[in-house]
Length: 341
Image 1 (cartoon, rainbow, N blue to C red):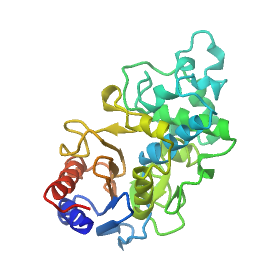
Image 2: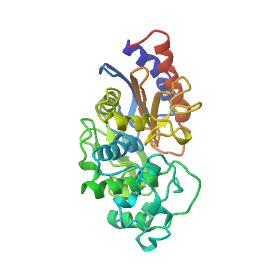
Image 3: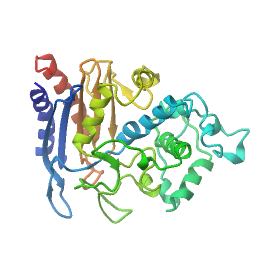
Image 4: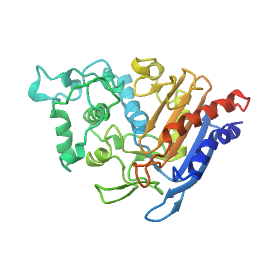
């Protein structure tokens, strides 16, 4: 039963919270038919006031924004013929590096390059230190001559994709309907606290944790999405059921790519964050605040682990890098031992 699978997968999470390494966490497991189970433990906030975690709390999903929102929107626009994944970003952003049209390498980057993190762009840049006007900071991103390096997982890739979406649709990413329990902040219900931010001088709660996302207006392409556990599970179920993307775009999501990456997502590989027990037919993604989502198409099963591991500070060993694969391995072990859907 799915309840037993969730209970088995929740054991490492409960232990992590009991040890004090993570304030609070919730684990949800769902099948393609919508049957689900949810377990939760701990606190939504420790400071400035203690608050018990509930199923209704909204989590800052951090980089799950990249797959739940940005990737989904880009692939939907591709299916509609409004962009070509293998065409340059300049189709949507003609002013990208507009003062170096002949030589700028950024002008040759494609939508697929950014989705699969196969660009030369850096992993991250403290964009928020360059000003506090979202429009000016977007212009900075577009006109900056970025330092070159080997392909890495890069927030800049998805900031560019977010700008492309804004140009193609004429609206912010926050205008895109993502379903109940998902949305860019501030969330409409109780929020889980993240970090006591030295830059903003307060505990972030209901406002995006990521500094660059905050400076860029709260709804760029790389972060900013909030969600409840049921909102994330509803998205996962719809992915399992093929209700969100067309078969052609789902093939893009599930196809094996370079360095285990697909369009937006990662596929299972030895030592990955979803656990070594996952089959190659599993995709997943994580978020800096302590979130993660994994979808196993072979079993018709998905699970989401949402934590506030950065509360009240990121500068502590939360054990999240060992917790995530432990949860995934426990979920799959439960399935293998007959605790099936």
